[in-house]
Length: 187
Length: 413
Image 1: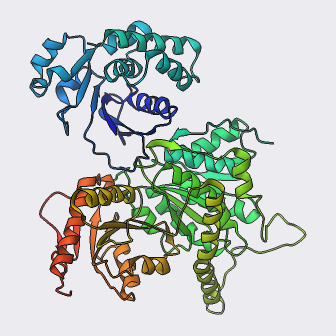
Image 2: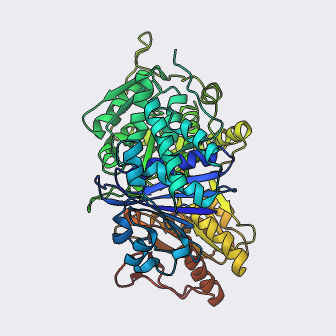
């Protein structure tokens, strides 16, 4: 079982990202869950989305999880959210930031004993450059593919195209560029 | 003629989308709806299928949930296949008309996304609305995950419209926990699903002008009781049809459903009885406890909340190994023991084994129910079993902050 917790703001596409990841993973025969905790949240409010991935049917219907991966897709939430909540000695963190990794970790005490498990990527700048909007949900998945080695980049891109097929070609292409850049730039 | 909808063999759907696809495949003629969180996407989905030619049906916009169910009653009496969706306050506002629908024997399907009732206002999932419907004369089926929300919605049409039943059916799923959680769902192809549900067979339809009928007549002490007694008998007797339809569904899909589901009960010493998505979490906890600590834990879950499966609850609980059972109610009981506790206790009272039974109120307003808490409750049941008597208050609260709450005690072994 792989468990992922997303830290996002409502409107940044965490739910779409979590469902997109789930849809891609399900095409490979795995079982998935994608859900969120938002309720009556307003645009801009901090929220969580979640993924579970397993080879067997997933029956844990609780919200609570002990994440293997934590995605922080809004830079400020790394400072204001409890991003290490229910973590494990192996939990890996992928954080959106414009700061160099060392500088970010220096400002977040909870990460200071986890430096080898923290990865940074500037999904905000990447999505602004490629998609034209601060929509960090798809780039974080590119970074995740690199960190987790779950799938080859090309395989993931092909399947994400299908997930995004209802959008105009221009948007699909921009998302592919964003995923590829984040894959290459995550450190 | 409605267009076919392209579906993958495995989809990743949340419970709402799964239910809306079932309404589409059943080719529901009329949906009268007043959308409410968290069930909005079900009727939104139906509306988009109509607009895009995937259903040859009609979406009726109304001014309230009272109007929604009234519209459903009218369309169903006229002779169409009818469905809608609601939650919480919307369900409460529908309640008056729910009794009319069942009394008029109209096989409407209501997909209910369970949500807490105000006050305080809360959009999240608990079973307050499901419990509010329990005396309304509807069949109530309960889905624990999105696949089941899809499967049971298809089955609901078959059950309700069966000529020996002719009763409205609710298909419940948990707000957010199921309605907004995307999981793998294996849908049927459109033609296979429709063939399973079958063409709608009208009974005493008002649009049959060659045979005028009256619906919603008034009866006083002369006939009212006979009507209600027959209605109750139809509901009790629907158990056979429910079993048949679920068994036919299994032959078609390989997916097995029972009026009472049980997990690891063969040799269980302690058990949790629950409804909704918590069933799956509790079953996972039971499996882990067996592996980790050798505690023989099991889970019992009424799939069919109404008609209440006294027969199968008795059968499932009547085993000599079973010592302690915890009934978990996700609805504020308002000055009583939880409804599931009361009903399961009444069923277990006539068994030979008569296990000790306690009650937990939990999960109100969407409070999370985690595997660790299910394990703690199993261990508490084990303590009752080892002591030979109930070691805690009979009614307790799980996952609530503040001073510990508990009511009533007994030393009965």
